[in-house]
Image (cartoon, rainbow, N blue to C red):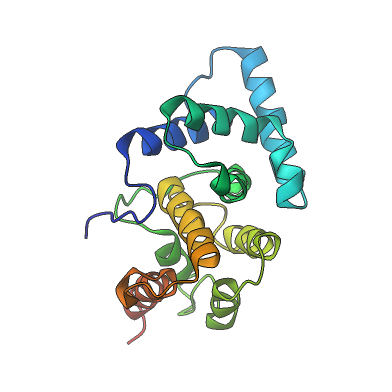
Length: 196
């Protein structure tokens, strides 16, 4: 199964997001102690932000937004969505080794050979039915904690942008293009791999 992006279709934007996440978590540049300390501070500031409005005021978000502005691939109406992306990605400590992993698939994978997914179906449904951006961010953070903060950064970023896009536009997309359908497909596919 190949990666399918709904909102992160542009290679340049995907590269910006991947590079920003790598730098924020010190994956890319471990040699400069001062720069590393600054990134830890930016990451902590994003994690402490209680609302999307608070995220907008962080250094970590500003560096991501500036990188997007530099590509010319940004829209000011998407600023809150990108704030949510920054806050969610600040929680992700590592990425799965499976390159076909998606965020929803990670939620549905078996937890410690218990026969149960990391995230219950009830919590999964609640995540999908979030009523506001702040509510969505809170539920994303809980979901990431359940999967030990291991998620594919680009899949998560694309899903966050997709959720905001659907909330803003409220238009009838083709069913297979809706985030809830994509998430349910990935989540239940992961569950079916160990439920017999």
